[in-house]
Image: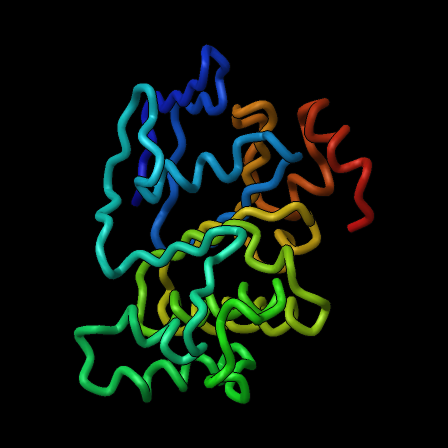
Amino acid sequence: MIELKDILVKTKGRVILDVPSLIFKNGKRYGIIGENGSGKTTLLRVLMGTLQPSQGSIEGLKLNNNVGYLPQSPYAFSFSVIRNVSMTLENLQNRDEVAISALEKVGLGSLIEAKGNNLSGGEKQRLGLARVLAVPKEVLLLDEPTSATDIRGMDLIEALLQQWFEQTRGLLIFTTHAPAQALRLADEIIFLEKGRVVETGTPEILFNNPQKLETQAFLSHWSI
């Protein structure tokens, strides 16, 4: 279980994230939704430790090799696609084999010798996911994991995440602009607005009967 307590992130006097209390339970999938600037990416960065909050604490999260993080725009180096993955597997003797297996899973098996920086946005996103999934993880933190992909790429990534969850029963926390994706992938939805948690609940309850006016207004723009 991961618990956030009194988390506050401020930049130049502006509150970016204000979360008095939030709990993520092991073996569940959490979808974080909200408009641009609502604090979704900031929340993931705080969890990952790449952004230190102005105050507050996080309990229960050990940042080690068991945690995988995928930023919205993963970086791809100019060398080969396979090396882009194998470089993260330095402790494995069969790292090239593991890298190829991961790349095949994300549909990049035919591009292992291509230059990483020549990939399309969607391909770079799948490359980043291959790096994350190459070795087993207990926690995945994914920022808009399908934002740059086409429909086929989105289906592939969602299927991989479902497979990962079924095999590991780990903790999945992801952000998305699309409530329909959260409905497909999440056990619980967290709706953020202006850096604050407005409402949480199961997809069925939150989407069919949102209690807060802010949630109702946000969901009114979407056909789910």
